[in-house]
Length: 472
Image 1 (tube, one colour):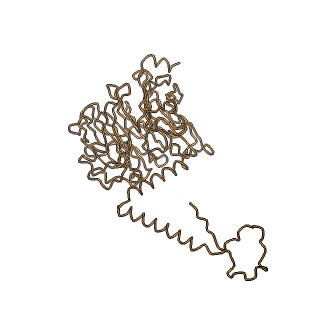
Image 2 (cartoon, rainbow, N blue to C red):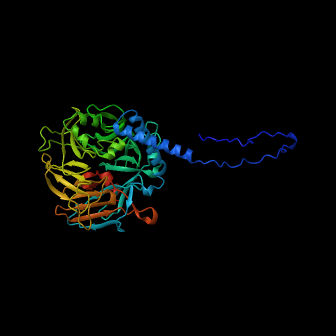
Image 3 (cartoon, rainbow, N blue to C red):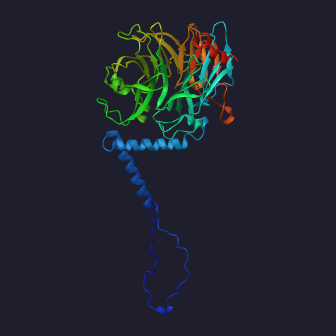
């Protein structure tokens, strides 16, 4: 509240001759104050400086009221970011500077590529596309979150549709699509997961904070990551400020009902691998997201080299501690974990050989770029294959990204922040390349990112009815 300062402008001596007293004059505006303001300014600056020093000391020495101050700062920073950071959709990290003018399929060697159809989604709209090897779109699913939203949603005030996209999608044999929705900038992360039919009609929806990834097991159950804000103290880890953003592994029935939930932060902290939480980055300390789970892979059988592993266990990638871990949901335990020469990785997958694949976002030390795909032996972390591009075309995606080992031995790689998908042969040759054809922003210099793709064989992966639909 501002203060109005008043001043006494009366004569310093009384008037002795009333007859000679000046006659009253019409009221005029007050004479400007000529007293110096610098003492008041210096006082205010001094108070602000003392408040800053006091706040810094409280945070440094971790004394009361550290938590209320940190929460107030975080809330203020989040509000400021929300007010200023999302006015231009093209300047969010759902878009990136385009690295080339090329669009669509730019490389295709039909003699070496795993020929089929490719499912992908793009951050420019809430849709998934099924395209052929030449880039022709054969089918499109589209559903805006604003039409999915209802009062059951964890997100009570969702962002506008232009700031929401389908982060991952998977098509089923009959043309049904499971789609995971994400919005820019929200904490907790993730808007939910839904199942659509081939006509983009909603079959079911689960509107918790589902995020990043899901996997469908042989029984049709869906295993998906969710987040919740948690203010409880984590025993043995008092250095982790609260509130935290904790990850959960949720199991949904084929019809979208929640049937189990595993608290990943809780079981990780209690496991023999819990001290890896000390690896957590400064970024995670700023936002309370100390693990940042980002991928799910359900084991179909024992993993060679991991004693006691079996079908139904789930491989999880934890970005902030640069660790991949095996979760036994029935026992509620982390039964195995490994860190290696990768940094802030995504998309850990177990191969039939027993080796694992990860997208190593920031660990490439070859001098080409910052990112690479690694195939490694899980017990020793020994790298048996890698791809980081070349000096002329390096992989460079510090966030997101994924990869899939195809039936012919090639690897389908998504370089998210380039809006690019490539199929790479074991010898490192690029045998197929797709660059998102959409552009936006000033001068059309921005490209929407791609997070995950699925390569499909219509004869193997689709039933006859859906094959007939896409062949028209």
